[in-house]
Length: 403
Image (cartoon, rainbow, N blue to C red; front, side, top):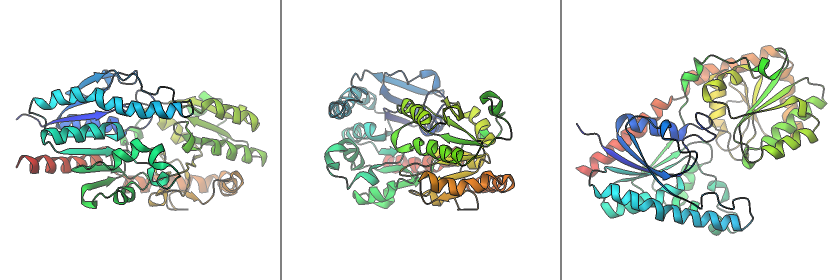
């Protein structure tokens, strides 16, 4: 029996920080869809798109997108170039999508994130094919009421307002379901799901992280895992570590991740007087992350908008005690004092007040991590569970359309 054919349009990388490094959502989506369907991915020809990462049976169709990231760091000019790049993406991707759909064997168009959604909508209208819009969460929930939002975030709002037969929105604490309702979408057209967790990392052989970093086994080790970008607020983690050192704690901090703020964060560590205690380890492949989670005394997650993120989920699964700011939907996952600690303030002194007693009580810290691990085992979906739920809706959508 011939498999159904899905055309997926996207601009984002398979992994957020390099091959097998960073957020796994797009990779897991492609892997799962590729196991069940014939998938054609339409995406720019960029350094981070590696055909070797694609599962068997997934086809890659690429095009040149010269404005991608152009002048991003230049005020005003960067915004204009980025907006123009959003439009040129659509005009460049469309000929490929149009050609694929003209064959008559495409059963679904799948727009992944704000670049892919408008193209998918155009194909759905032109060829009467069902269409899915997929979002990995959205910060627009917190930006909608900002002055000039309709202009500054035009491409985000234009995509999010686009009608779709099904909208798949990640429940990452950024309140995407509420935003979609606010923009006029019906709740029955929205599938609102948390990311799954990769349980294979539990069985991964942990690396000897402390030995590699030159840290004594008895020395507390704080951990931060994220892209090094503004709203992840890794600067707060550094300031908390500095506060604890000032109070006499003999601790170290491992920062896992890469991003545009690395230079500034290194300078901050120097300015705070703890450069010799802060280890910038860069991007770490997912299976090697197990060593960091298992070794860490605590994971700190102090994001601005939501801390319902992959590192928190993975930390809990692997028994690393989680200390997370209660922003967004974090309290849906972390139960304060039970499977982790919810922080009500991100001020360095306030976080240090909460964390310091735990660092002095190894038994309490280990108990917190153990409870988190047990809770994660019982409550968190695997990626297989997560994608199975989505595939059931896709099957229903395609079956209804063909009928």
